[in-house]
Image 1 (cartoon, rainbow, N blue to C red):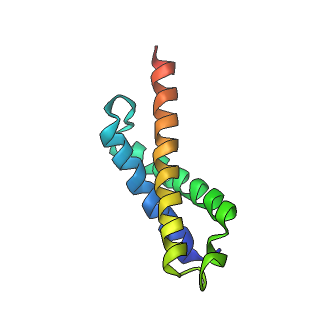
Image 2: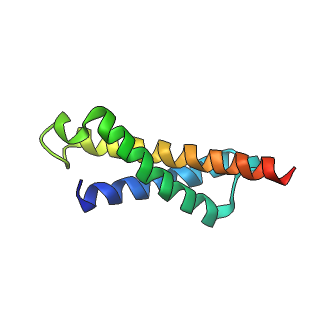
Length: 95
């Protein structure tokens, strides 16, 4: 794991969290909350997908196009999923 891989996962997680927040208005945490949940989820989701598919071993290295795509997808989905989980928990606690 290098810093470039982590940055790709965190940025795509922040984007995934904000996209999910805009699509799921009832679970949205606001822009800052969506971004923070997305960053955390992007880091976690990217790591899980990285270990599941061994992204650096897929191609020529950590900056191969297949590895980058894996990091972007893992980070984006991880950010969206964590934002939705936190938003649902917040909504359930508010009741």
